[in-house]
Image (cartoon, rainbow, N blue to C red; front, top):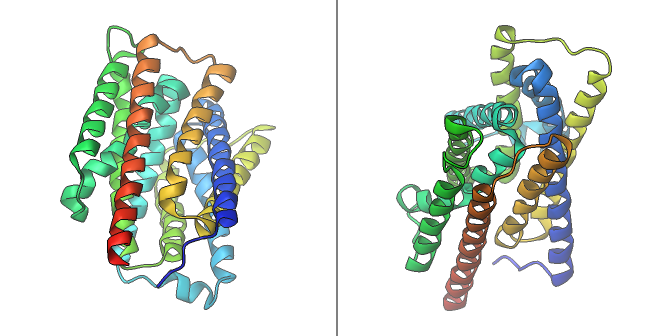
Length: 300
């Protein structure tokens, strides 16, 4: 029987999660800055090469070393999961350059609602009527934020919607993978498959970095790796259901970076729709936590 984290450990986990979310928000700004000059493929490939070195070093420090961490019961599934993630990241970085960070993140914030909806057919989970209402309201927020009459981007706003669907599918696949492999193993395969997959497409769209842009690229690699390290430590110290709502801080940070540093346009429809989406997402997290407590209470 597992022991619930202490209050102090939970507080530390929340602070680490906030740090990770802020770091990921800054990472989005750096990704956009570089992708506007060199394209998404070059930026993401270098990032994943660095990330692969990190996961190899991380695995080497774990009990049993790289061999134990890399051993998966579902290697094909893990490979497909890793490939899905790199396509989602390519969609995201491309979306940053096409609709801006604000426009992208407003729609992307709907992915937790998609995960909740998809968990019913793919994971066999039960979603009560309250969460279905929240999911419906959240998708209404998406429709509002996509309003072509108010959006300065038009059909291009479909890009963040595709990205949200991809990341929701990745979330479902990660939950399925957790039934067979440890979090360390899934983390390892994410980095290695991502680096291998991007290496295959790099020859098609490689743009060599110039001058001081290597400094920005190094900063991007460090923020990406640092964010993942903070995320790992956060989940070591607190329950996922407690930490997940704080992931929205990263989405908000990314949008603020877009508004302040890139002058991304903001419309009333985007703000209203984004507010509805985030409120609905936070409500679904809260209801999921209530249900989990009820299940644990009945089992005691």
